[in-house]
Amino acid sequence: MASKVQSNANKPISMVKILQVLRCHATGLGSKTIAAHLGISRTTVKKYIHIYQTCGKSFSEIMSMDDMELYVLFQEQPRAEKKPVEIAPRQAELDSLLPSYSKRLKRRGWTKERLYREYVMISKDPFARSQFMALPAYASRRTKRLLKMP
Picture (cartoon, helix red, strand yellow):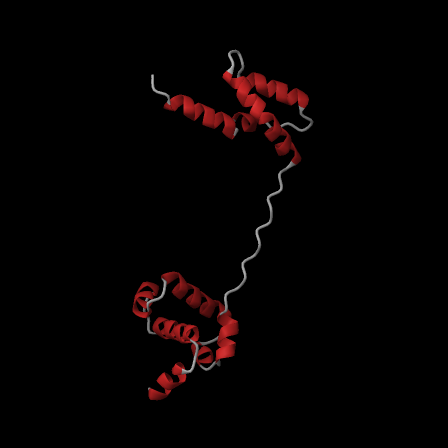
């Protein structure tokens, strides 16, 4: 037992924590208990256990790894960059029309149905009627009207 303690004394703290997490997991402790026992977050415990389970190495292989191998195996993977959302041309066209449609809806005599008929006539590739009627601009306007007190 003393040799284990001595070998852990020279390792960086994160490598020691990884080994402690894996030892506790091997004894059957849950992630919540391991996190409380070691003073690290439960998410970190789950991350280490997930890496261990998906790496394809046995417990004894991981325990026999040196610091550099452990570091490479358990290092934080860079997150994939989020791609900018591309807006479809017909969505962009409709988005440009929405401010004026919202203003017109406030006027007497304008209905969503009337706006939709106008939209179909001027648009090259119009949305379906049901999609047009469910636009967020109309939904927010309807919600505001319902919240007004008499």
